[in-house]
Image (cartoon, rainbow, N blue to C red; front, side, top):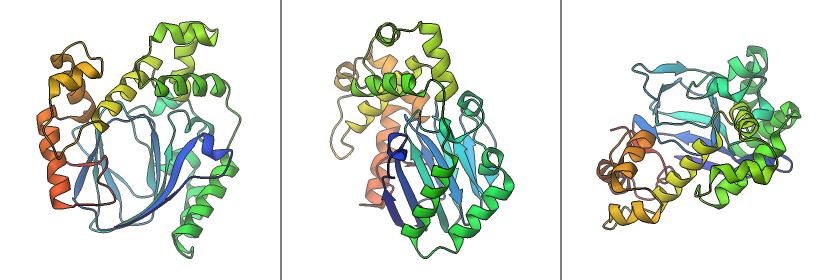
Length: 279
């Protein structure tokens, strides 16, 4: 697969981790995307994607692409035999300035890009992207569209600052201290987080802690799960296992098996850092 990524220019870089272009044959027909502290927008330029969100039984087709606020559980992506798309990896708070509704309404409920930006806009954008001269021009067009849609968002500074504190601590921060430091009530802070990220500060902290723990795992070597859970601050290994299953849909040992399978079958693949084969 071809994967091209770059950080957008200011002020988008304060909201977005990167813009990306993806084209080619996916490593598996179905990939699992575990919960993570980020939101996602995909503008699809090929055959429809199929997504199963959280506990949904059925998958749904997304022809024009999709918008996903910060997920609280694993998603399953079904890819066509060849896929082509551009997308945006948003920081947890980064999606809000580009959508007209509270982000809480999108929590664990993927929607099409048309539902967020409207059919005429998306149809025109997809036409321009399809006619662009290569990935870099496509990402420039996507960046221009995002700049055009960027809007002032009440409470964004508060949520961004507090989210950065949570991230810097790897999620290991007393939630009650956050509202005190911010000079607002815990209710106000939680409400702003729900509006702009879709989850509470506590949930964001849990996601950061879990993500940091997973990325500390070396799938090529032995893993001491009890030590890993203790080092990450989990109450006990059972609590860690419950959290692991909630975020990935897999037990820790099954996750390791699936992760090793990916590395064994597709060494050095552009998607090898986080997505997993659907179990």
